[in-house]
Amino acid sequence: AYSIAGQTALVTGASSGIGEACAWRFAEAGCKLVLVARRAERLAALQQAIQQHYNVPVHTIVLDVQDLEAIARLPAELPAEFREVDILLPNAGLALGVASVHELDMQDAATMINTNVLSVMALVRAFTPSMVVRNRGHLLFMSSIAGREAYSGGGGYCASKHALEAFATSARHDLVGTNIRVTSIQPGAVKTEFSVVRFKGDGSKADAVYEGIHPLLAADIADNTLYACTRPPHVQVAEMLVFATYQCSAKVIARVL
Ligand code: 8X3
Image (cartoon, rainbow, N blue to C red; front, side, top):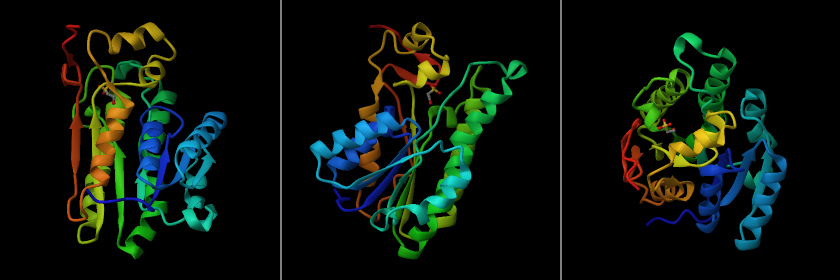
């Protein structure tokens, strides 16, 4: 495998779930970290915990990625040693609600599109110019099976992840002929706070998503993310569709345990 030690990795949505798991794995791999999240206390605790285990510089930014102007300012505002981001993981994302299209909550829809799509575009716009100049870098998109399949109740979420897929593909086209790699990771059901957020705090509905299977955990997706980053420079993992063993499509899960 190819070493990413010394590279700078920026992760949004870093205070929990897949983002947090990826932060740990990047630290273990020797990356400098820029961790972005809304929840200041969790982010500070994570920074401290990572620095107790690994001797890597960690810079934190408290930010809602829906603030596109703040994202545009980030490259100039980062301390010089973190400014040249090599690995960009705009991971922050969410599903809000399971309403049908004729009952869609437009505020929820806007939050999903802003967070899952527009913020990703803004982060790429902010950090890719320096990658192009340096002719190195890796864009990692945290997509979903919902970027490949749409399903009932996913009107806002599936639309956002399909848009993300299209953006990732455009990025791969725009950047072909450079050393910048573009990877889309497409997890199925992963046991994180994701379902609690989708069901707006209803813990029993959230738990039901992962019942009767051995679900994927955030660490499993972090493994796959690190796999893509640690291939030799001539290898571009374009897409990774990852299911739990008892899942075979967005809505087909064998609950046999
Ligand atoms: C989350 C997975 O199956 O709810 O991205 O679309 S799913």
